[in-house]
Length: 502
Image (cartoon, rainbow, N blue to C red; front, side, top):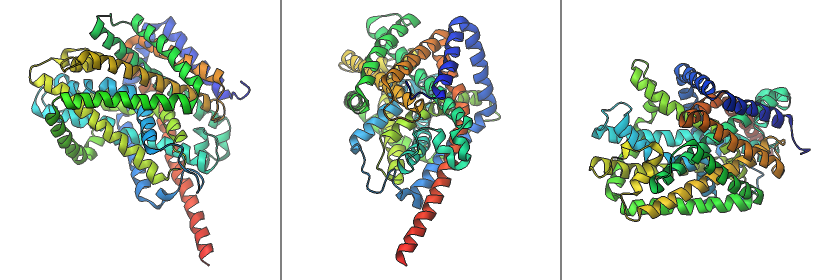
């Protein structure tokens, strides 16, 4: 505990106040958070769109620039993990529960419940539903993660800086990055991480509850979700105590095996040709319309603007609130790779996997709906996946595998989260004390429970949008700081090369 910094105590105090208010005045807490979420969405939607698209452009710049040759580490450093394990860890930490939760639910919602612009239930709505699912889970999401991870990895492994968010801002903040201003940055990052990870764990608990309700008729309510959180908390704390290389590595590979088992099952037994055609068509329209979707705010249409606030702005805020956690984790496992290799790997590979996932699960849901086999759109959001699996061979077995997959993603995300939070509150230590990880593990579970108690899924969404706003400003500073540092290093490398030639 001697390694603890002021960041730990202040962030913990802020979160405990949040928990006490949630318990003491749940209705007022939900009302105030909902009002603040609405204020942010209504007035700052344009800002989120510009900021997130800017992060993607920063990533594109790194890929094509000479900076891409710079290594995240010393010149002779080698990657700690092979490509397969690296991609597995990226996928598990970055999308996990969310992809399973929304894989069937989001496309069917855009198609049958509320289409972005097309007529709901039309053929155009089918194509639009897949395009916007790709948009929300594609390069924009991973661009957010990439910027944070790239800055952390560069300063940590190239410049031997502490693995802290504040340490990445030294080129723009100077000595202030190590004082009260730097502590404030880290406190914002820690609180955003807790809210982002806890929100996602809440989604996982709701979907596990939904799967059990669909299979066994168990009630869907807070009590069941709370018991699920308790059970999984015990499991992820056991995993956290085994350490990064054992616990997270093993579970990440288990996640990939379960995910691909589910994926290939539905690929083979589902409407394969329909899904492949949908994937191919959507890739084309996604690339073609990516610029217009990136800046779409619909200032003259209240219904379309409400849809953007409820979906696109929510997603951008979700990814930003997860960025301190996912970015720190990706940085931790990416030592030894060049910037170009890193950006291409983090930006493109998980995006393509996500596109395939939505095409198979979302496409299968749409196929069942359009052919009158099952009304997936009438199921609760958390039950959509299980409703799809129920209409194919071995549906019950696959649903059990799906619940197991959600649970292992839950464990992996929480396990990784306790490590990152421990690191961020012990001055960047790569071996945070187990007692610190225990505290943050309990805090994650308590926060997820309080959010579900005060307002269910809506409270989860509200909290993530609110927590994302201050960290988005820090992310912009991180992008400027990284580019400034790369410019300085490039000049130094060029001068050294010129000197050797003389």
